[in-house]
Length: 303
Image 1: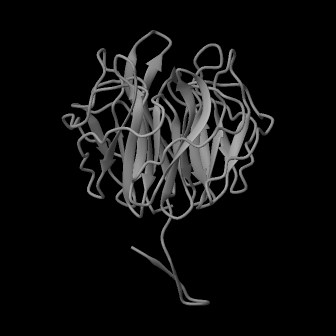
Image 2: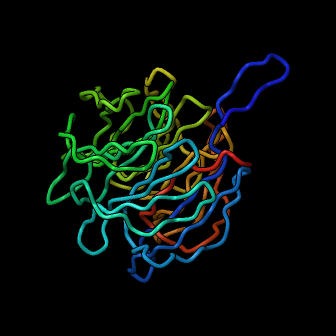
């Protein structure tokens, strides 16, 4: 699917317009399968109850794949799991798909290439750097031996079909990053920039850039670090909004991003919008079930 610009006849690939937050752990210490859709203007909808065959989970991860669809997977359902859920271009979550990769929690996921995705890193009975590639039809591949220091970084798209994993606990809190090529190959560690921290969030914005934000050092923080289209991470930008950990983030609206949910002390449902220049807004009043450790991903070409 492509859109033609009549003025100059340049073919422009369509961009992700909507997002979805799903799953997590609520204030009653219960895992949930609730989801919340995000419109192309960044408005978060009220809760959608989990469908039959969708098992509640905590700290899964999610990414776009297949151009306009999404996938969420891994996390904890009690024990760790490797099961995944495909999400249609209308934001409907499919029932669980049996695990292919090693069951683990605290993974991260990102799109890469034109229409594929990657799950990486996480925790089994210790941190790992294992990855699993996802085809453009949503098929998850078996484990690829890890590259880089094992841990629980976050991930986002940047550049032309590339992705980046960064920060997270890797023994101690870290600011190390690992770039992912447009063929899904993970590079060795790049020396970190910015404050080392864990339980942060990451998302792509402006079509070819990314942002890491929030997290936990010895306390929750609200700083951010922008990533340019070459994968270079900038130094810390002073935070806006309430310091948050264990939230989730996704691209939406073609060139913007949204952060939502997580823990600010108690669990929260607040959100923050990120402009196409990487500027983080003040807190937006929350919508939906208060929870921590959800997953998020962009979907749909339709505004």
